[in-house]
Length: 160
View (cartoon, one colour):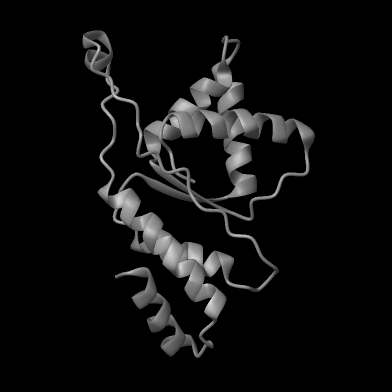
């Protein structure tokens, strides 16, 4: 089901009122969905690299950030987007849970040269799209880790 159809269905079922701002966001989410679902990943395998035929991912889609007050429907719209996305390698996670996973994965790596690169690689292997709920950083150490993680995810073609 398309995002707008799911939205209209939910309005009828739940009795909510149509919101112009939410409809504007839905247009952007549907555009993002189309780009993601029609995107052809760049060839980056070892054989492509060795043969000199590795392609840069010029169609990389970084994502969309929803910001607004409490109760404006951000989580609702993200859920509609996530549920309608046909990509199988996707993850929807609360931001604080994601940061706990990052810390757990870092601890599990031991003493390696670039642990954040390994963490980003592991997340990228699991998901092409990651939807964060309640994205909020108050800890400076987490902010520094997050910057490196996001760079690593974007370099690997993950959309947030």
